[in-house]
Image 1: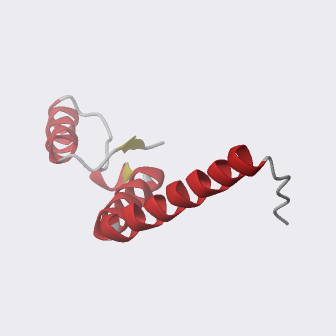
Image 2 (image 1 turned 180 degrees about the horizontal axis):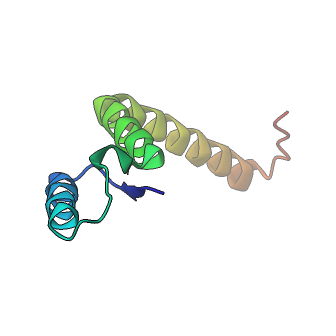
Length: 85
């Protein structure tokens, strides 16, 4: 059995304290049973990657916004039926 936590440094401190407490109480506990949540690690990695692409993401959002604006403009102005395949 192990303990899973996020990557906060206070959790490492907690595990060390828990290990010291377990030794004093003569309870078996192994620090190697501390696992960092893989989903949390992936989330942090993706957030960091996306933050590096924030300018590009903003530009793509602007293109989509303008595209939608012009599609709606021409649709309502000329009552065109527009099919996008």
